[in-house]
Length: 113
Length: 112
Image (cartoon, rainbow over all chains, first blue to last red; front, side, top):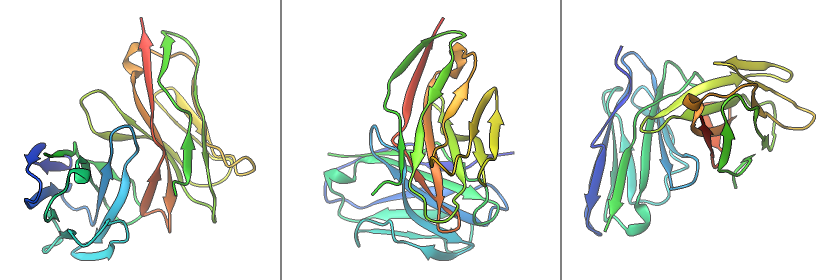
């Protein structure tokens, strides 16, 4: 079946613009996760949803970052007033249930110029 | 800070060589441990996992044993192939394992 999909795959934006990154999890997966990966580093946890409820947002770096999953399926990670330091690969993962195996999408590479 | 430390790369090997990638973790409780792999141009895939002490995870000829006494989860393969060239990430579960904490990744290149 279809895996986790993310769009866009690449996004170049100017500093100060808002961006929205989309994640479409595997059908039937209850839990959805967002991670950020800087070049040469491992992914770092941002936030996590069970169904539509955001269970943990402790990894969001500041209040310019927000995420939603209004119908318990597709999720959007929004970064407002982007800064160059926001440039990274943003990865989404889903699992059948919390603490289950996480399946990762291909990621969105964000570049802020 | 990061609670997973893995061997720095890059690692370059010849085909059929033995591969070891060291991974240690800081422990509160008994987290699940994972190895993820990222092949060129692809996303992260779970390679293997272990959920309790002394468990051995294995897949595609790779093995790793959960060592509580040394807080380690080293990845090994006895005879690597060119197709094993990838970036390997060690990870531990956090707070009930729904959150993963990753190491920095080790790039492995296998030459024919």
